Length: 117
Image 1 (cartoon, one colour):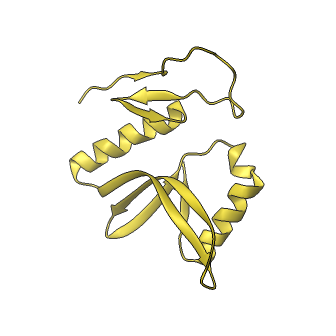
Image 2 (tube, rainbow, N blue to C red):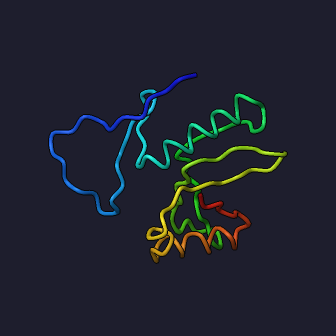
């Protein structure tokens, strides 16, 4: 399986807030080249049978005391060794954002750990 990573066609070339470069792999758009590369790695692992049920951009609702507080959108979710793995591709800067840190703590309190790549 050979794929090419290329930036999507755009009329304006403004710099993104977090300096990431959106790109496209096999017709699927990603928010960064790092995320696209990770997708390729996970697809290879899935083809080899190391992981199953690979999905991307999975919305996980955060519900506290029966009230929906917000939702977290994970970059990737898959099953490895019989356990659900929630993965997010983050830069050093975006790992420090207050909203991300709060959602990560809320999910941890609900028993969902986020693996940062």
